Structures are given as C-alpha cells and as structure tokens.
Amino acid sequence: MLDVIAMLEDQDQESDSNDHIDAAGQVPAEQDTGTPTSSLSAASLRQELKDLGIEPFLDKYIADSVHTVRDVLTAFGLRLPPHFEDLCESDIWSIFRIYLKREFNRRDRLPHINCMEDIVKILVKCQKVIVVTGAGISTSLGIPDFRSSGGIYSRLEKYNLSDPQELFDISLFRQDPSIFYDFAKELLPEFRGYSPTHAFIRLLQDRGVLLRQYTQNIDDIESTAGIDGQRLMQCHGSFKTASCMTCRSQVAGSALFPDIRNGTVPKCSICSTAQKKLERVVSNKRSRASDSPKWDSCDSIDEDAVASFGVMKPDITFFGEELTSGFKSQILEDREVADLLICIGTSLKVAPVAGIPSIMPPSVPQLFISREPAGKEYVFDLELHGQCDAIVRQLATQAGWLAGFETLVEGGQIQKTF
Ligand code: OAD
Image 1 (cartoon, protein in one colour):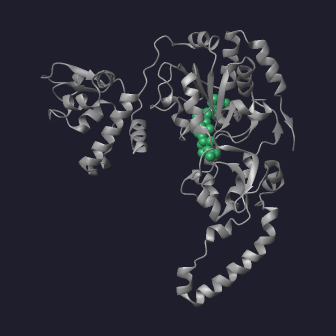
Image 2: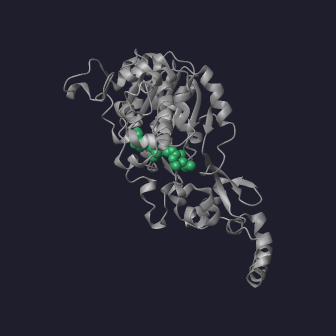
Image 3: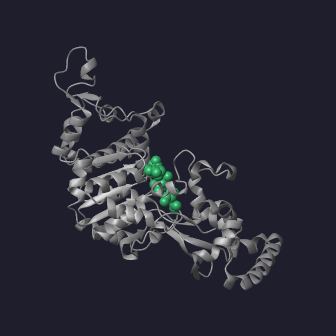
C-alpha cells in the first residue's frame, strides 16, 4: 500500500504547493467561479491535520459529506490515475488512512537550518553523528550504484528478471546461483582504497563524534577506510565473509574471489564429498518418483535445496533474508542519543534502512547529500545535491577541518590489487 502512495506522489512532484481544497467546496480557489470563501493549500491542510489530529480532521473534512476522500487526496497533491476509478471505496479509504497517518507523523523541518553554513554550525558542535550511506559513496571509485541510469539494475537485461532486484533474491539464488555469480564480479572491488566521502566519515570518527555509520554497501570499503567495527553497521552484510548454503560453515569472503572473478559458482569444501551422495539419492528418488506419483507426494524432493547444495554465498543480505543481526536494537538505542543524522549517496528505497530518518526524534537535524533529491516522503532540514566527495570537502573546509580531511583522502588513494 505504501508503494501505491509513493507512486501517486511521484506522479505529481510539483503539485504540493499548488493544490487547494475549499473549506466549503472542491474547486481550487484560483479557478473558483464564485461561491467558496476560504481555501486551503496542501501545506495548510497538512498543518491542520497536525494541529487537529487524524480523527477530528476526518470529522471536519469527510464526515460532513462536503468532500469525498478523493477530493482531499487530490488537495494534498495526490493524483489518482484513471484506473484507480475501479478501486472500491474501502481500498481508497485504506490508502487515505495510511496517507493521513504518514502525513500526521511527518517531521517538520527545523526552521534554523537553511543553508550549508547553518549545517556547518551544527556539525562543529555535535557529539554523536549517525551517518547512513549507500552506493553513491563508492561510485567515484568505479563501483556502480544500483538505481542510477547505467547502475547495476540497468545492466541485467540478459537475465530476463521480472524485477532487477531479483539478482539479490534469496529464492532465485536457491533455484539458480549461477545468475548471481555470472554478475557478481562486477560487485567486487578490485583495488584497495576509499573515496573522499569514506575519508570524511573516518574524520568524524577521528574527531570522536561518529556515533555509528549505517551502511547499505556490501563492498566493505569502510573497513579499508579504518571505520572501527564497533562504529559500523553493515546493514546488508558484505563480501568480507561467506557461508555455505547447506552446512553454514563460514570462510573469509576472499576465498571466493577467484571463483567470482571467473564467474563460476563457489562450492563448500566440506559439502563437496556429501554432494556425490546427495546426487545419488536425488537421482534414485527422481526415478522412483516417475514410476510412482504416490511416492513423490509423500516424500518430495526440495529442488531448490538440491540446486544450492554446498553452494557458498557471500554474507550479503539478500531480499527475503533477515537483516544483519542487531540492526533494530542498535538504531533504537542510537536514535536516543544522536544529535545529527547525515544520509549520503543513497536513494533510500530499501527498508528498513530507508526508515531511519523517520524514526529519529524530530528535533535531531537531518542532512541529505546525494546527486538526486530524496523522495517526497522525506523531510530533511537540508538537501545538498551533487557529487558527495565535493560536498563533504566543502563541509570539511567550512568546518575548518580541511587539513585532517586531505591527509585522510591521501591515505585512501587507490591501489590496484588485481
Ligand atoms: P541506489 O543506487 O539506489 O542509490 C544511490 C544514490 O546515490 C542514487 O540516488 C544516486 O543518484 C546517488 N549517487 C550516485 N553516485 C553519487 C555520487 N558520486 N555523489 C552523490 N550521489 C551519488 O543505491 P542504495 O541506496 O545504496 O541492496 O541502494 C540500497 C540497496 O538497494 C542496496 O544496498 C542494494 C540494493 O538493492 C542489496 O545489495 C541487498
């Protein structure tokens, strides 16, 4: 349902401040031909929702039967496309209620943060910074991000996936690990080094103000940049270690690198002897199953378990797998003490990391740095759009930290390892 709302919002990015609902009618005031007296912009409606609360807001705008749910959604700036005409009233109500709840809980921008200078004043004073990072902080190193044009998800056509995210879908991996391994070499850093943005985060750590970095990246470049394991939450795991799909034995991720570079599926050394036995059992079962359908129904073969038997998988969190353990308790603890949130180089499209800004206490300043604006569902106090390496250099300069920053950047110069 939230996806539906995001889709409706995306359709009309510009409409926010222009859409109006009449207190007494449905015609926008600017186009109104006569009657209504007062009119409300989407912004005033939002304010009223916050001031009144959800139920009194509904009493005012819906229970009086003057407006329909569709009118109010439209006034908020959501456009219902024609095929939504087919939705039943209860579905529209569900969308409406979720939307109102989200709007009600949406934080307000802090009025004293309007430009880089304002955020720098906060940066130099803060003591406990949470940094949330995504693929954008590694693109200057030549590692593609996911959703930009030319990113990983635009390069998967030959695999005929119904959704590019299936590349990281655990069910597909179980069925056919070769798809992931055909592509995985593109995800593997083939150098030692880190970007100026990694250096900036390390600088925060060196200054003693990094509460924690929550990274969605699997490249483990944070470790190269010297981010302390205690200060780092690799929310989607990483290539640092790998585990067997069958016996769960864990090895250093680098043990898989030769296979990954060759595009072959790495196998567990412990399970490889058992593999032959399994193949015999499976082939016996298959031939008996074809003779007797009854036998098959009471003792079926788990084809996916067979396909991924003894296959090694980097300890990356695939869609359909549990997130890195400790994420939830850690962020709930951190948000209580954080005094600044900085999100860098992420589209904030994947839960639960995408939910971090909305669970922070509203008084904690929020800065977003990326090439593209954050989604409309987010309210950052300041968005700085552009190359993150250049933006963090500017922040370091204005904060008076340039020398320390440049020393760290120097240490991150790329050295080829392969
Ligand atoms: P995305 O590719 O979704 O977003 C990266 C964002 O960074 C985009 O909005 C880019 O515009 C921006 N960006 C790229 N290069 C930049 C640069 N040099 N400076 C500033 N901004 C830049 O990547 P993530 O948000 O990290 O999951 O994606 C989240 C998750 O989706 C990933 O962890 C991955 C994927 O499915 C798994 O691997 C399980």
